[in-house]
Length: 565
Image (tube, rainbow, N blue to C red; front, side, top):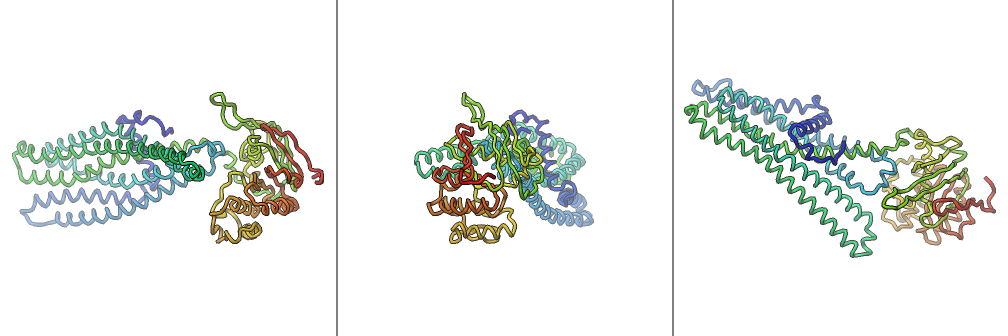
């Protein structure tokens, strides 16, 4: 479902009714549908209110004969209405929480399994928007929907009963409801168009927030950059406010039409009806009682329609994001990975990759063809200038990116969607653009013990402690932060460790420790070490040195002091 479809195309009465029905079905299904107690409570509330209307009129009609069964019916219905309405609201908020959780669970699952092309595609404000504001708005609609169903039950009883008391008043009531419905239909389409634009502006605002959080260093270094981002953010906020205000004014006008229709109905009953029916006091009292008691449910139904329209926008926004995520699912992540404890050989055979798209005469970066073979126990340094393809090569080796041509093999078997996830389990890594989590997610007790030892080994024990699986502090310098990421990678004790420019942020002492102590330790443990580095004076400390230029391997040199593997 395309969430960005032109809402004006859906603003007809019949299509809008179908879509609103779809949203209502979704909300009820997410809340367990007809099995949920709220359905019973809604019926009790609606029937109780309808019973009150009947009991009041019967009490008024038989007042001269004394108080009888209708009084008891009135008291029972009043108690049923109050108690069921309270329990209904409590249950509705339970449903809101459940629906929010279900949608966020589903979106989180899809996002965690999205492929690399989606994740590096750039702006994801619409994803943030869908998982926060849109989910909240859609879930909040459930309580209004439930209340509207209860109000509809009252109207289904009250209108026929009004015809029974006075067919003229019944016709007037139906006309008033129809008039209010027409007014809503006229305003609803344009209101939804502006609501959709407000939603798009919120997604753009989420992107600006990402810029503020991710680029705070660059923003501190240039006032004009900070001022320009602030100006654009304010413009996006202003646009969202303007769109939302226009939408809300139209929605208010749509509900105002229903209120006007009810007001006209009451004026008709008080002024015109007595002239037509001759002013029968009992009939007038009965008609006015019915009109006054259904006034609230009628307004509630009309007030719920705009809420369902907003929920409809959110529903299709969420469905659109879900559709994009479904399309972008990584087939490799669909298979359950197996932890491989060892390997004999990883090979790239004629591997090629394209980064970016051809656009406006710009040629995308091309890597390859690449032919490489790696074995356990090797320490391999990869060097080359900026843009030579080092990071792209690492993304291929680690299975993050699928080659456009050629194949990657593990112990002679080519990787496919069924084996890639298990292949990735061979790796630990500290990428150039790494993310430091505040928890050691997914680590076993043995790995946590190893992590604590590595934190001490890397000189971080005075700054970071491990509290269960949580780090006590992640506000570290660039070098300390990268060493903590390395501690995590080392504690995982995987067969292959990938380090992209690890030593770049380190002081001389930590850099010496990395090359003179850590690299020999990892090599002696039988692990394959793949390290991107520009430290040319350290090149003699590896088994192999791979040099890259313009997406190609220009040399793959085995260092003379190392034995053949």
